[in-house]
Image (cartoon, rainbow over all chains, first blue to last red; front, side, top):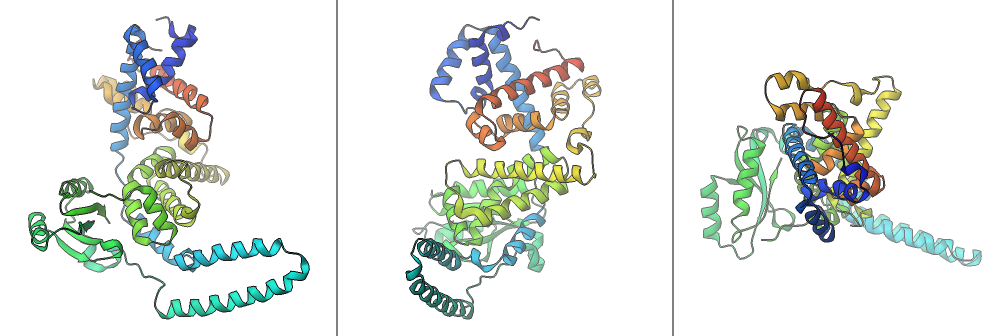
Length: 227
Length: 186
């Protein structure tokens, strides 16, 4: 079959937009252009049908690839724990200040650097004192993954938070409905780790439970599957 | 209902919040993994890639400027990590164009066609595209990237995204045609 589109730059331009028209990620003006062209160009319509067919099969192919093993998150969190402490908020804040101070000092004439050195030494002393306090308060932050907490690895979880206005009775009924139980929390921002079943649940089933919970907007503020 | 946005989570991660890291990981791990797996074609390597990707996120969250979505940012890092891993394998002589030459587990398109399943034949042909064609097809057809996002992830101009996608589609059609399925183009 002769490719008549290839010989017409205007139709080529429209043709190249078809995949983005099909995936819905096209600007409003381009969408209008494409729809106008599709209305009187059966060849472009055929191309769009091909794209939609390939798109559906690409989605199926990707969906068949499954998901990463829970080990990945465990390994990641272990790596994060092993990272130097500057990743914590306190250290980041100090890092920002030190950067600012370094830039300030670099811009000063030599005579003032003596004062700047004194300031830097004072800062180091303050930093040391604050760090000591931080460590003594146990602010390093511990982390334990589901798989490292023994028997819990055989269960499936979601992470959720309740709306501030949720009543105790509603929350109790919620747990009964889902046969769920809190295993940890509340954590930062009021998150709870909640057991929703045993290891026989597939990730898709856990996703479905989370989706059902998400619909309980009067009680639930946030919910997502958790490892 | 309030659901924290990805941008909010990244801000919390930048301040060292491990819980936010877990939530963001849960939200994006599957897409990142699948994108990586389609590039490197090895489950262990793909898991290594996503570990590296999220570790980078942990370290660089403070530098995220929200000029692109978190998803686009993650896929761009994933692509870089996947290509870097493939390059290292090649340089180490562990393979010769590993991702290009490895056979998909799916049947050949011809065999699939004999089984009278056009969808399976298309999927088999998708597996036979080059890595450059696969990634642009996956980004637009599965990850629903816009032309701007695909350009950012792959690191090529937007016009090149369109032409590369065109050639990928054309190649897919040719592979199907040689397997006995003529859809009228090319």
